[in-house]
Amino acid sequence: MEKRKHMRDAEWFRRDKESWKCLLCPKGCSFKADSSVLGLCRVRGLKNGKPYLPGYGECVSLSIDPIEKKPLYHFLPGSYIFSTGPAGCNLTCDFCQNWSISQGRNVPTRYVSPEELAEMATGGKSSGIAFTYTEPTIWFEYIADCSPIVRKKGGAVVMVSNGEINSDPLLKLIEVTDAWNVDLKSWSDDFYREHCGGHRDTVLQTIKTLARSSCHLEITFLVIPEENDDTAEWQEMAKWISGECGADTVLHISRYFPRYKLERKPTPFDTLVKARDIFSEKLHNVYIGNVSMENSNTVCPDCGFVCIERTGWSVNTEGMNKGRCASCGGELNIVHEIS
Image (cartoon, rainbow, N blue to C red; front, side):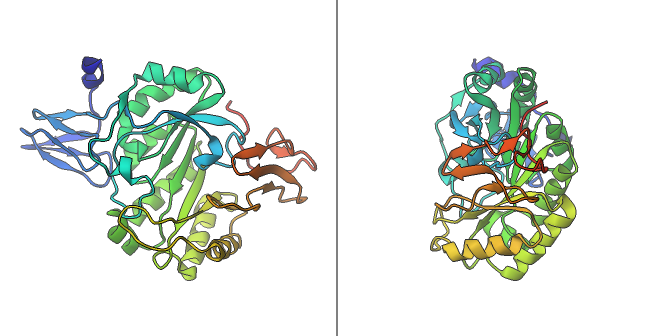
């Protein structure tokens, strides 16, 4: 097994004289050609002077989740999806909600071959595979190997990503995936540099590319008090999403809880409601997540009929008929099946 997982050739590395450079994400980690070292993401690097994938197939968790938990509300609503992810990340968010596996060292993992993962992802009640929990794009080669097998078996492939990936590898992943949820952490590039070690414009380019692709796209925005809760920025963000991705783009507004290095009080409920109201001026599908409330239903924009009713992770889709409103037949912009 050790031999199999390390035989996979690493992609997106370029040799420059006496060094190697990783081209997968904007970090562009550079390594001396004769070294053995890991990149920032900790799943890619060099071993004995050659590109190396120590994180290939090493899964931090293997579980079946409601697809709404990703969160995806307009893609196969009410279904369950097998979920896993790598032990690492290419951002260093000081507020990371999953920091113990994304930023931690010596995280316990289990190696799962692409064939075995595909069997897990398409068996029982699972609708496919979600690469999630940490940052899946750093797992490029593993996803490129797993996804075609999952899709051949009739399963969907979902990515839950920070969007920090270069354009060429992104286009390759689009070819083998069906749906994405991308975190847009702030409208401020200063926020990205200070809190995440990344750049906003990279994420915007990823979102724009996905919006123009065949993949289903939803966006998540974690509201952090005193950090990204400026209402003027919300208005600019809403205008950009509507203009570049379409007014039907699904936006999930999430509540912050103190985790990892950043100490702020949990986001007030009133702030989440205010954010929803502001974003709803430009977007038709804005949901508040990870709080107990009743405003997570999907309502027909034409007649106001409740098409999908959500209570916690319990989902009732009886008000929807093949992606349309069961009452008036109105379009809901929901992917209800994989073709």
